[in-house]
Image 1 (cartoon, rainbow, N blue to C red):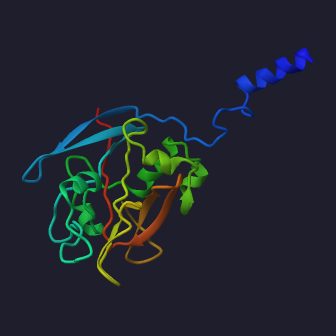
Image 2 (image 1 turned 45 degrees about the horizontal axis):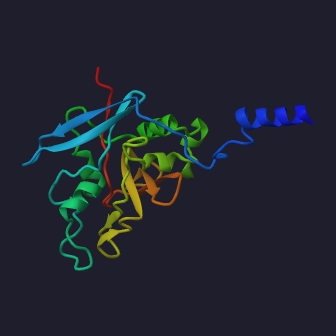
Image 3 (image 1 turned 120 degrees about the vertical axis):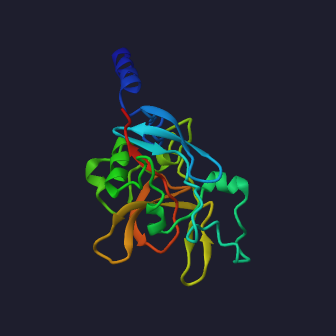
Length: 225
């Protein structure tokens, strides 16, 4: 009996059967480096933080550069949706259609490709075979993408999305965040690949969306030497 107790104790200490989280908690992932970039294009400079994963550096806040006329604030002419407050702008950034999102590139910062997003997802623990799949994938990758500076630092926000057909205005603010890639979905004209996170889901969704809709933007650049 004495030897059985010792063996069971060994299993609980070093095995997976008695793990504290039993696979129900996200792994701890930290950036390899971090820093600050100042965007001086507007009337006022905007300070962004970035984090490094692998050979890429990712902006940690939603882009909030104003462009006309395709920047959605959201739509001030729609009585159901009020113009962003300063606090909302800092948290959610602005929403851009696909073509406008591409004009935000500057100083080596670019709209991430679909492959850039896959590379990030793999660095956060997604299996290589799942990265190419569509819809929801990555057991904890969505949760990691939403973590602030106490975790992964990527801090994806839930800004919703802007529509101009079948109504007008911002939908699902505070619920989900959808982010452009620069990669068109060649199977369907007028669609591009995106990533979605939802506040209460641990996975991340890969799907294509109509390029006329307004989505959130993050920028990425190659590691600076």
